[in-house]
Amino acid sequence: MDQAATLREKSAKVGAGGGRPTQTKGTRPIQVIAVSSGKGGVGKTNSVVNLAVAIQQQGKKVLLLDADLGLGNIDVLLGLTPKLNLADLLSGEKSLEQVLVDGPKGIKILPASSGVQELTELSTEDRLQLSQHLDGMDIDIDVMIIDTGAGISDNVLFFNVAAQDIVVVVSPEPTSLTDAYALMKVLFKKHGERRFNLLVNTAKTKKEGLEVYKKISLAAERFLNISVDYLGCVLYDDNVQKSVVQQRAVMELYPHTKASRCFKEVARELTQLPSYSNVKGGGLQFFWRQMLTKDIGSI
Image (tube, rainbow, N blue to C red):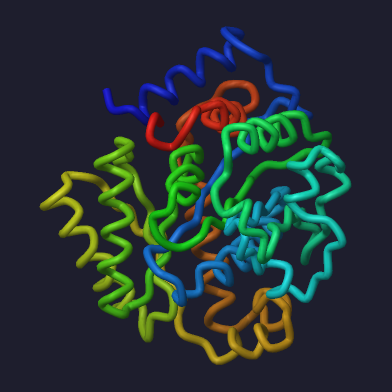
């Protein structure tokens, strides 16, 4: 059994009463999704924001965690000016409920700290603090989406291993495909992750999106023997850039355009993914367990 699967099994035992009980309000399972990319510039954060809005419109309650620590920009993308951020939470000065801000359609956002070098790599104490706040939050959520940084830093790997579902965002550019493959390779080789979901952004046509998926999927299967599932593609749409300029989600401003329709389709696929755990507390119980890991190298 690979390392990731072993930890999931241990997490289930904790949820069944073998460890610290979850304090999360409610008893329904929570889906925890990490969204990453091998390189920057592929529209990862924009995709995260619009997927969060699309899922919220399905009637599910979404918490969006900006985990691009030190360089977070979800608030900028949405024209928000939060007075508090993750640094205030980790310092112990503020509670999670005080730091959370309201995003479009009622999504909750935990903003990152932009330009704070100390948070570019979370310490063991930081992970424990964050886990305790998330585990004890007094709000109902169905889905937590983690917008990680790009690349293969320890923070990126940590949040991916801690989540139930991993989504890798790519564009049709060759460098994007290469870097996405490298991210999946590291997560598999170092941490035993075998299940990935691919989202192709800014595809000219659905055929191009499928071709991009096939290239990565074939390489992953041939050289790594891992599974890559296709979530779908988001078609190139000028309205996306218009929404960025206006600091709004395209799902809000232009809900019936090509990109918005694609985000709705991908959101449905994403929320129908099979869950690793059906224990009380769902994904957050596993997330809490991973937060206690001493360092990313031991996950």
